[in-house]
Length: 365
Image 1: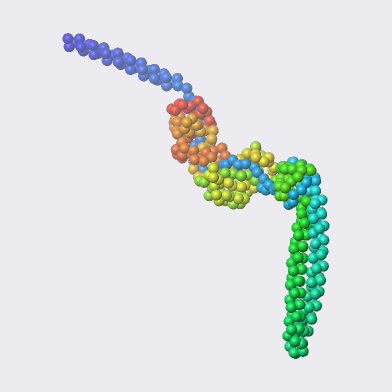
Image 2: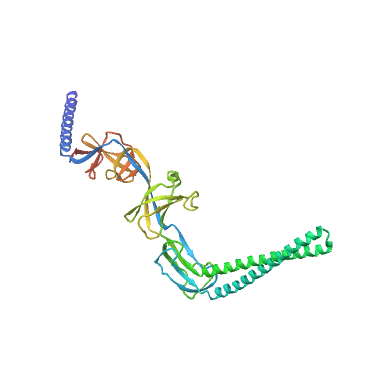
């Protein structure tokens, strides 16, 4: 019985050895037949890159001016059209000034009368002052009575009051005439600065109210309004130069205003960027880069990074490529500042699309 058991055990060990050798031969064959994938690599090193904040803004006009008449009336003429470029002093629209002209004529008559009255009052005052001086001298010499002196003094006081009243009436008439003159001048709307007609709010022969907009003009100065997050607002400075990109058209800009109070809805701070180059349509979307300095670290080409629920690269060690998860910190041009890699490590930068974790690779130049 014992001999029989020894034979069975020996036979089992022989079979196990045979299968083990077959498995090793198969593994060696698989390894030999494993596809080797060619990759280009980059050895990692610490580098410095300029860093900027990238935001999206909206093109707007620096100033939008609404021109309206200071008095009610009927629009006599509209001298511009939407989209027209205007220069300083150019006539935009006129108001029928028939009524204003009548009022101006009447005001001029009142002013002329007030000028005549004040001249008469001044002449009378000068005469009474001179006469009072003589009477006062005689009274001091006791040549006339106190009653005669009081009568002349009263007459002088009345002349002074009459002159002050005439002067007040003159000033009032002068102010009214000036007001009517301004209304006459303002019956012609003129552009106060260069710009483009944005809208017309009235038509010829239409009745308009005082100060109601008739012509709307936007200035030639263009700005881009950008909403900046609270975490970044302190990194932006007044006078800072930025780059603006509108549909591929690049231009330089300058930060000209930074809001101190955030928007109630978005909780972002509005930053105004003035753009002196190029002309863009109002409302266009602009990409704005705010340079904020340099950042030192490991910068990896964007094309070497995969994103599939996580960000990762392939690190090449010997003849194998291994998947390595990374954290992206910043982006500059076509490179990204990352965490999770070490200096002197090699990453695949070409040929890595067919790689899997642990793939066998061959480094090529």
